[in-house]
Image 1 (cartoon, rainbow, N blue to C red):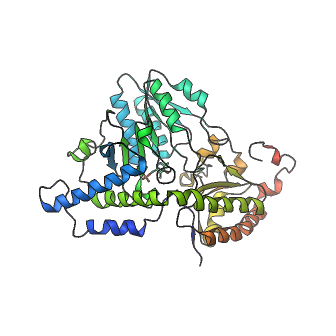
Image 2 (cartoon, rainbow, N blue to C red):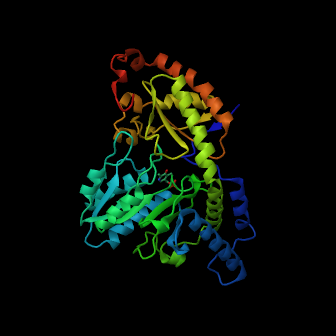
Image 3 (tube, rainbow, N blue to C red):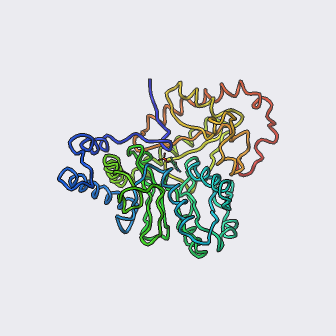
Length: 400
Ligand SMILES: *Cc1c(COP(=O)(O)O)cnc(C)c1O
């Protein structure tokens, strides 16, 4: 059966070239980089090269600005927890309503357990930050601002360089969760004021379980994992050599494919989106079609449930995702779409299609054939569809 993978914002396939680059470091090259012998030295050399490869992808000025972690979640946690320790006299956090749970769960915990004041800034219908609320929240108590570079559900891109400048005017640190942006759009940290940035290997065709936190030179940092002197004392534990080397290879490949991602892959995404909207009524794009990642399309199909859509898509060999937190059992629609005020009848039926360089035209053709009957079938069974008020349904000006 045809199988179409369009869930690359959840995870990507590790590129075979990345696996090949990693393999020796599971076998012959098993040394500990810290050891005082040839086994260790060879691994150390490979780690240094991998660091340079990642440095180039994000445009960091110095390779030691990279601290390797276990992934995006750890990087996010490390950035915020560090800022609360280093920013003496400041105990407030500013973030957005559409962050990944790696940020939102942490700040909710800090609020509850430590009484940290958290300003959660809202977004508009296209997912853009409420700048007025952001400026107002900034102040002498702000320890750190954490705003994502690009949203994982809609692809909406935030003006993080500008947000960082505003944070600095208030004396606050600026962190960005760039897990979805790194490898998809050009990033040049040397030219920005961003203090810390999180990234993750498995979102850019690298391995799972490896990520990094960029910490700008001169930024005070307190580790959450203390141990040996690895990562200049900023993250203890023997280096994940295969992971770091795989991430380096993935970074280099991402640079080579960046143009393809922003031209061919974006065109595939656009063709799918346009085709679906033409073929299926009562559907619309969420997010900002004019300012988003090249690989992401989030389309709401009104009056049906995303989980049901995904099940039927899966039967047709198509993998995508919905934003609903079905794990909670409550079938709440995505917090991102709710923050954007997407009507409930639509937010429930939102599907995220996320492409990668591995997708091609045949994938789009298959999805365009498969989706209309799926949506039609589910709507036939939906009481909400039958009872919808056809006189008012097109009246939401933003989402019509
Ligand atoms: C996937 C993702 C994370 C988590 O990264 P892990 O490496 O899986 O821990 C954090 N933030 C965003 C925006 C993500 O998409």
